[in-house]
Length: 404
Image 1 (tube, rainbow, N blue to C red):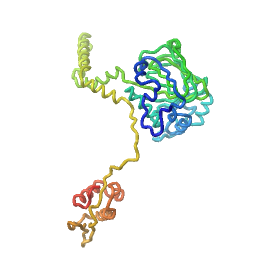
Image 2 (cartoon, rainbow, N blue to C red; image 1 turned 180 degrees about the vertical axis):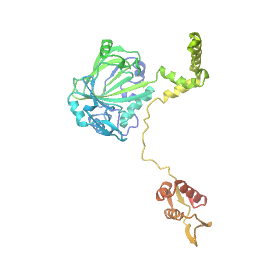
Image 3 (cartoon, one colour; image 1 turned 180 degrees about the horizontal axis):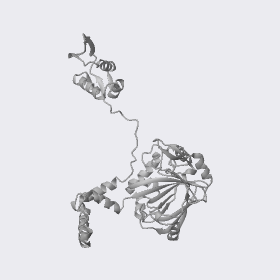
Image 4 (tube, rainbow, N blue to C red; image 1 turned 120 degrees about the vertical axis):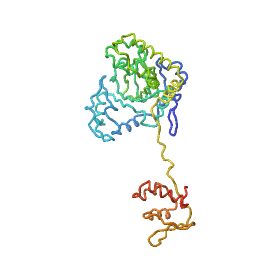
């Protein structure tokens, strides 16, 4: 059964993981071990297919060499081989992929990687949002399109949890025994820290392999070694990467509170004062940090930060009901009358002279009877907005106009 239907307002993590429950996933697998969830072929119908992918890729100005990459035999294809320098939507010159060149390289066995697609359609936004809500983290989706027997990437691990949603064709995933201990994007704890030879050595023995088919999901906790190889002509999968807050983020959060304590703003002892003095300062600051960790305000701020730790996926809901002010003429008795050199506005309460130059705008009001502020401003572009608002306000005070 498809997880997305036209008119559907939300996709939940339970919809995505079914038949596995969300509770079972977080209890038995989350941050513990890999998981393969078989699915029906139509599970991701309406989310992604060849037609949807072609439409996305055909929006040329949306793409650059950074957002649309090619890999062949574990090497990145230089941008110059499939891009040309063109102006993007902001007027900046970028290396923009050219469809004919990309397709030619795909014929030669290259794999296509479309990065950051999680905001490009309603179903993709909903899927990413479902993961973010359950994880209290940030979700980012990349799409991988490969052809049989050409490997794009060597065995590696990721610094985030991965959910591979399989869309088209078949691909063999190999998952290895080694799981690096909670790697992060840091020079000493990321995939790029190691050479390919080191990766091959430390990935360990094969834990299991699985052929993913349309509708299947593969979960890999961060740090789990894996690789993948297409075994059919034309495969597509979407990789959801989930990044959660970690202990180091607490250190950053504590700074906002520590800066209010003068002890953290005082100069450190000069080296000439000796290590003993520096050690005493370090112990004192450590005690102050420990005290901060017990402060309810710090806990509340951390919980608030974690609850909002996601990408903005708000959507437009056009058309809107205009909030522009609406005015109605208070009656049909109002007239403009010339009296010698002056122009008078007459009504039930008598007559008053009007300022020179306001005859046209007031005549427009009397003729239209009911109007919005925006329409009045558009009809009298030479009048500054502040002056127009004062005229409308004065006419309200005189009882000529009333708000709708």
